[in-house]
Image (cartoon, rainbow, N blue to C red):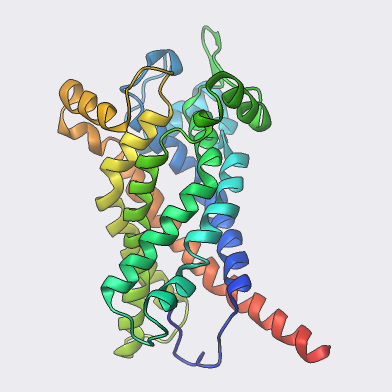
Length: 310
């Protein structure tokens, strides 16, 4: 990301950015995971009722309350381990490689165009999905399943590793990459909205000297990025979640899933769980980018100090 405001000598290496992005993604997931679980439950609430038993979900906080009441507080963190697996591979690529990809497409330009930034965002978003898709499938399956119901257990998987094994055994390796195309579409949009919007807002703030390159600046840019991402990505996110969580053979593909939703539930179905999505993406971006900036600086200083000592 662009730097400035007293950090002109701050130029972390690509490995430092990759590590910092993965670590920051994990921190953000730990903080915002309950909101993501509520979002997933709301998004798939029109899907197979067997997955949800007798629970009824209404609104973000109502959904969280229902989960805690029927499943315990642990239900809010179903799939957390797979989520952390995902962030270490996903955030590391899509955020950690963004600057390097932007410089590559911009041929080293200090002020790359918006088109160059969008191309970099799309590229790293797609690359991240290709690497992390199995972890995303497992995370969504865990978040959608109900741990305990009044009528008994309704869990589909006994644990994270069991989920990887079961999906690979029952659905083949293709099952682990289920929903890959809609996920690539979603993350091309999300990565452009999040990473590129953050990059541009932060650059303009520093360019017009509205703030220094500090935490208030990072907070402002991250909030704008989260809002743009929620508005643009919600329809694709709902399709991705519904398709990835569907039973084998229920949908002929992501496009069939989208048409089925449109015909049976109407256009509003594509914005199911929007408030949860906005709260999740807004808070996730704030925690993610603020953590990323601080971890990146700390890691760069540590690396620089080690070189001085040696």
